[in-house]
Length: 368
Image 1 (cartoon, one colour):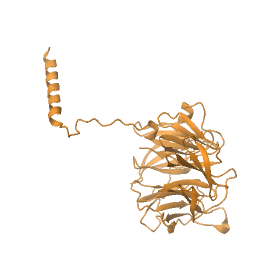
Image 2: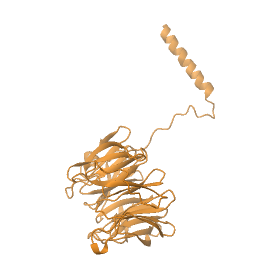
Image 3: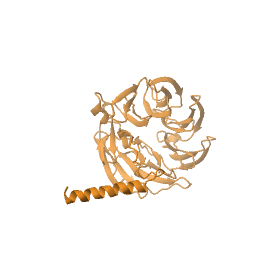
Image 4: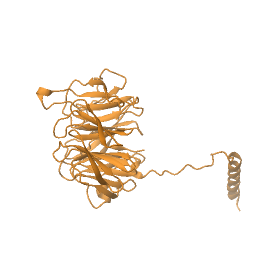
């Protein structure tokens, strides 16, 4: 045995002795960390791309934070079919991906590990959003065939069948689960509406219809447990004009506690509202720019947080708690590939751009 080998074995013996003397039976210093068992597509960001209207080109993009890469058109690459027209939203529930395809009247279930098709919820009419309610029950909001006869479809998850439909005011849209109640925004669909329907997930019936302002588009819960609804207002009827607003609601009494008038109505395609990690700050897009609003502040902030200078068509807003970044979807001309611009949620500083597909709409899922 040569001299170098002797040194190697000496150091190896010292290392083993150190482990033996430093790790007692009650210590955890010698225990290896558990492997990361989170499926691949549950760890990053899933981005819904509506696709060019009516073209069947809707898709989902995936941003891998660890590798800093974007994977486009995942579903069509690993399956033998495309998603279809107008991908409205994407979500993960019970370790499965759910893609709501509005134009194809379906919700596609895919595996979080490889994005392979597992099943499809059919029999829907202009579906909008998916909400996991219990282990075996989910809700899908839908506008109805005529765009105004809205409802929430109750889905039995073991066979992906519709077992009930709960009629709502027109334009059942985004939903928020608060304890055993599902809050459903009723934005009007192809008509006009100004209500939030609160559904008991135990009885599958509406407990209350809360009047807000026209076209409620987004809903979040803050650090105090209060519910905030972003309403676009009414710009279509000069005789019934109503400004956009942020409205705070008490989830116990269903009372409107505060209305922050935004001072204008703007024909934004999407009006999104998100919170920061500790839910003390609201962010929303309105009129092509992004504002931030402290939840304890009763005066509307009028200075844009992000001015939208480099954004062509602001079509959605999201927040990624893992990075503390705001995600701004730019649909550009709605026919060519769009992008997602990322900004620091504390400073508003521009970070970078993610190149995605046609018409990213902000209805993304932010994983671990």
